[in-house]
Image (cartoon, one colour):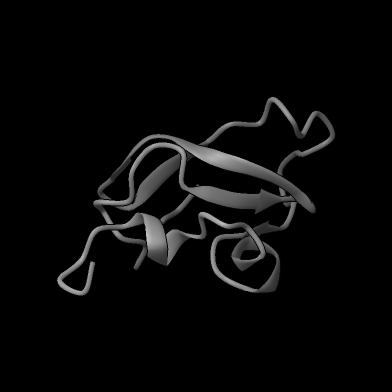
Length: 73
């Protein structure tokens, strides 16, 4: 998955929504790529919608901006 603009310091476990299913980042954001755990998304495939920021991803109690360390945290 392309991660242009996604925080490089987002930790493993940061939530994402893949094809409407809540899942997480595996490992670290590397350059402009990231890896998503597809275990809970067996029907996901090429072209499946992914939400990194937004209403579904932010519905989690651990949404990305709270997981990524910053000056404000």
